[in-house]
Image (cartoon, rainbow, N blue to C red; front, side, top):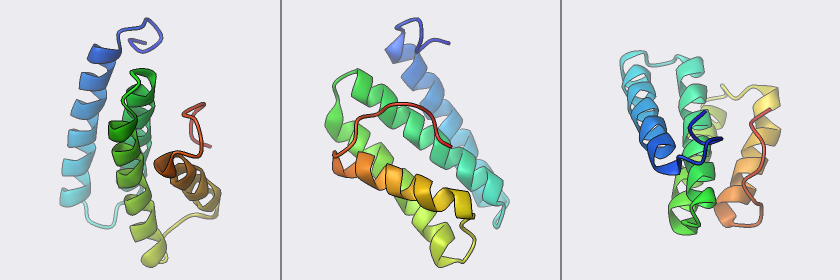
Length: 105
């Protein structure tokens, strides 16, 4: 809601807080793929907020973190089929070849 209202600073702070919570949950609940995916979605949101704020370096870093998390799932043979296309989308964002638009599938 804050992002839609143009409050990017507060939206970013909220998203960073959420990412911290999801990171803690993934550490406590090793093997919980939902927590990892929630963290991936949050890292993408953070990247999108940075894009909105014209902070492309920070956006690429956040997208890169999301890519690394999905690649770890892939390497562990735990990546859902739907996330294969999502991984490619995030790779494009991380490399700067795609604009931040829309939500995850």
